[in-house]
Image (cartoon, rainbow, N blue to C red; front, side, top):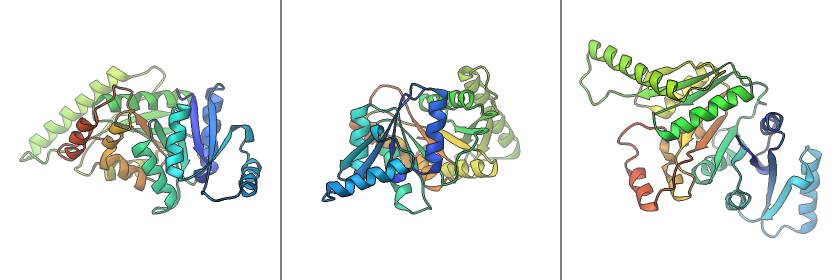
Length: 284
């Protein structure tokens, strides 16, 4: 699945180290790089002390890269140069600079980004995978299923959120709409299903997509949210949009934003879709 992982030391906590351990256990060949970004002007002796501190916290020195400059810029540069598949970063309390850093990484990184929470991830039993029937969400659902197999999770819940606000609703119509969405979700999951994975599809009607994802994850006591983001090129990172951005900002559950593995998109087209992103519900 993920073969090259980048961990920013500024956002490394016990939960990050546990996730790294899980990836290494499931795939011994995985390569992990730790990046420490030092502000410009810091002397070499101080940089050496920071490396010693990292080693004291269990970070292997041979895998640690030290750079000077802006944290976000250096992370994005290292991710591109090392061709990493995944960046893992720990969150911090809402509004803290660490969570803001993770959100900006998710929007701009050329790879998938995982945000862990402050509590160590001791086990993964239930995975929530929001889907909108797009190729992007299909990638996320496949990733969720693969993680479920590797980490021995009990189930994956494909979550589809729909909204019938443009239609004058009445009770019979609401029942028909719900049944149609349920059937569409079941067919989508059936086409993407993997063996050895228990799927528990769920549909919810709501105009508030990000808030619903966060609420369902919390109330259902899910251990991980796996959701798709658009594109693997810098221009298409614009398409992450407000929904996924809010989930990264508000969720108390770890979030894995999976970049779509499709073709790159021209910048002009990315901007066009970004401007139209709120005209219809989507998860990217």
